[in-house]
Length: 120
Ligand code: 5GP
Image (cartoon, rainbow, N blue to C red; front, side):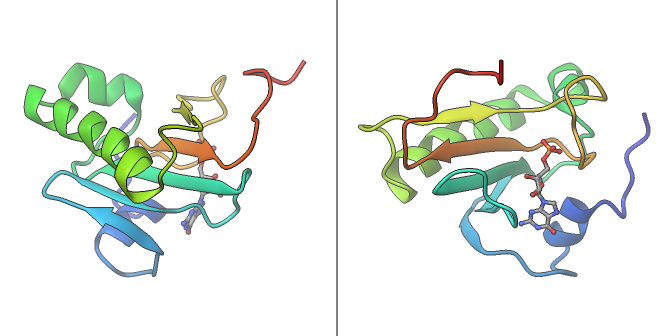
């Protein structure tokens, strides 16, 4: 799947639409989800144009991959204060994964007991 440069997260990265940013560095941007599914729901995205976890894991540099996961941990720990109570990360990929926005994003959920991993 080719990268769609007009997807909503590409537009957030270009500052064409607003987002409630909580963290930014050279490789990653983190912002609140517009439709939170938990008391804390933040998305962390790479600044590079990667469609999905599949694209990112195959094509991103080691530096980009390390930076994204460092950013996820930093945001959860130091920005959101979730490390002690715990949190969940999630990356939906493709149609079966119910990925809606075609730019890789890592969800961080927290702020309450989140229950089992998948709906049963
Ligand atoms: P997915 O289903 O692709 O894993 O998750 C996409 C997420 O992006 C959803 O949780 C949705 O609420 C969020 N989202 C969609 N459009 C926007 C937007 O314009 N701004 C923000 N902050 N989040 C968005």
